[in-house]
Length: 154
Image (cartoon, rainbow, N blue to C red; front, side, top):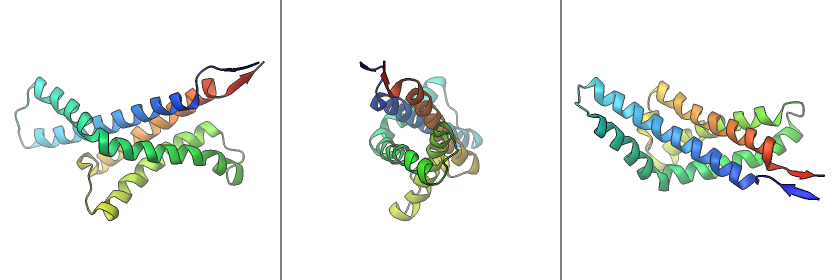
């Protein structure tokens, strides 16, 4: 008998949502820090609105880009493991793939679109925060996939 506890698509969706949310919030945080450095007066409601508006506003563009990039990265992990890193754990490769693909996305936006769309990634700290968002998504996907994504045969 075959039982599917949690399918891979659901694990991917949660990983994407985590990556995008952390990337969006990191972007917003870097913008708000920049505003604070020029003595902009922000209320708590302004800050909350900024986080929510950025998340919603970037969903159709940056969110889709992240989804496609993560999908390609996670699909490549078994091939990379089979042909290059045979002794490396799939979990570690998925975590690395999440961070690497975020860096590639940010690097690719400049020459393809002629502009860095993610203003929060223009500083080294902002760039690292974006990569960390990918690492978190990669870790979550690796965890969920290893626990629930496979078909369990009894």
